[in-house]
Length: 417
Image 1 (cartoon, rainbow, N blue to C red):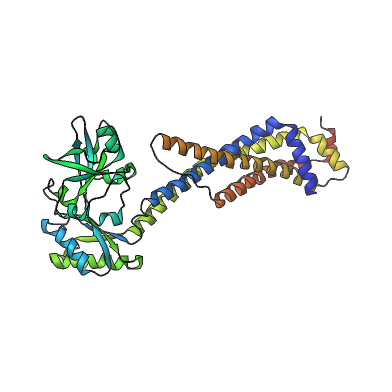
Image 2: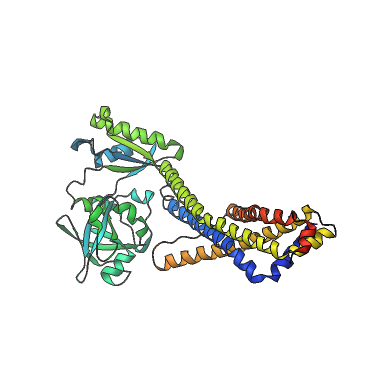
């Protein structure tokens, strides 16, 4: 019975190819929308979470509660050195000094994001050097006026990427510092949003996103008056299992040195918990948007039901003949249900392929425009769900037409003109 029903259903659909295609269109659009969103969402999630992989699950962020802190509560370089030497659960600690400024050459002047870093910074966020080198230990210790600039900044300021050895003047908070470029790194515009969120309108620039410039911590400190009042430090535990221990130990040490344990000035945040929150947010957004896109599947299902009702009407005499020669209600029901499922299953398959193609197209367009670099990820689970859902739509919306066909009286069906 199955093979016979498949043969009849296939014959019916191929006899009305255009109608079948238009019927499947709603299913194709719905499945393609869901697949596109899910695959781009998974790819985007991997890209976002991958930004934190360099830091790892061993990192804890220690912050000063600025609303409750007094001047003496802020963290300084002596505290950082004490953390390095006194706490055995801490592997590395760093506190980038960040500010907004300008960089200028003889021909160009642009807004920059200036980061003062120490030797431990690379353990948390490696800088991908393209030309030149990283800072030396002496440059860190003796506040050498040297910088590393990203490729986009090098192109904008000098008109080429390899600018190692060139002179660059930094300006920030009314102070000027002549420097020399010792390295050029990959552009890191993807970090812009996180970095810039604390600067508000200062980030507005008519010529686009500011460029990143790195310099030794104390070099940047020479043009920032309150450089020894740090509100945030990054601490890396010796192993992921001891990250909470390291965070608590750092807070205890700071409170002991400051004598402010009664005011809860410091707080710690495990990076793993931040990653979990980001993951949950992305999942919720993907699920919500997919659900909205899935509404089109309901519309497509209604289209399937309408066409199947038309098919029942057109084939009333055929149904009467089949029932007159012995076909049961179950046979007729199964025939039309099979036809409905085949219709939606083919539509679902085409939708999966179209959705994946659309996802890669959007990804390529976004990458070419410099918006983002996301590789779509289509999981087996998403394919199974899409196929099951499209088949379910066929079953659900095919029930009524199939029952109507099965319940036709043979004599009434044969009389139908």
